[in-house]
Image 1: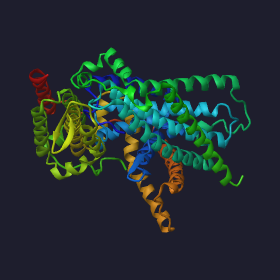
Image 2: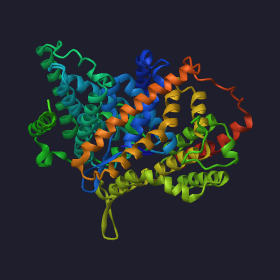
Image 3: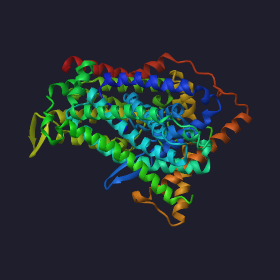
Length: 318
Length: 255
């Protein structure tokens, strides 16, 4: 997932640097009170932990493996703003020291892996937890959903960046299907690992899990159901419309690219001159079918989360 | 533990490249990569020139080609993507050895190969010729936020400690006859990752206590910065300067 130099054109990369600087800067300001002097050695150690964790490869399918992004995990363990800072440090050092991810693509990699994975993971974690009373099960189920979807969000974001300023030459729908499909599998792996890590920490030092800091007050207040359904509805609608927009309409992405002027650079003009082929011919073309597919994908992810919970509950002695 | 000891990516030496101050080298890396990315992909000769200049720097610094080649393996996943591009790309197509290749896809693959490789080699050269504390000090001088640099410093210092911890956990597991290989055993792996997090966090707390008891009051002491010499600036700018000129010429000629 680390984007190298030259994969996305200069203009887009530069724009990404500005956005990433804003995101990381905002996280730094928000975490300033917690990061003061006390937390800096701690954050450094946790950054080393995330770095080591990212070297941990796990098999997804025969011949294909994924590595942990760790953004959602970091957010659940340390809270979103500290997590963004910590994962950013990891990404910066990977580019400077290990040549992993291009220096010019640093902004893109920071957005994909440090800012958006972490924040989207945190938002989904809160959202899934919202309707349930604070409990170990709710935290673990939400961790699974958040970690899985955060990887998919990051992959889709990559496709958006590729559409805006990529080297081009490929049918965007293929890129999207390839990235989203493979990363759903990688995401499920990330989900399982995140649940196990959060579970292990919850057992030994529950006070270290930021996302479970309300667990002490078991049976405490919860979000009113009405507000939850509104939130869930908005999130679902955004997810579905994004999926449909992106998969049915790469020309739409192209249009956005041209509107923002990014497509008019040396590399971008490649995609502009190669006419995008007609997507409306395959069996996938039916818009209703795509909405159903998106819904099914979301439901399956949630079911997997609750399934994990069921297994965990059966195994735990309580 | 105080940093400064050699790391695996570093090639010890006293060349001109080694002696340049960290912040100039980091700036040179950023400028060079920016120039490479801005170069139009169709100007194949420009990338040949960039590669030649990189080779010259490597020779000057005494970084062996084999070391660079081995470190370039990080590029492999994206090279696999690049190889796919001409096969799955869009028309117009042409035949090569009985295989139908896409022109746009081939150009895209070349772009990734050329620009990605130049960027990777440049980063490898920075890491090979600069001690980590110098890179961190350089980032500091380039006005990267202090908190980021400080966290990075701790991360780098304890990276080996944490990886050592992982290795010990693996040995302990293997010694008990358990070596997780398939996906279904991921639980064991992840549980030890949980233990690793707690160990890292608690070590962080201990490190902080140890620092406070030795007089830490929120900022690390800095030792007077050496003033930047004009000759150093000129030397550091040679590599990115050549790349920028190359990119400019390439833009005019084939842009």
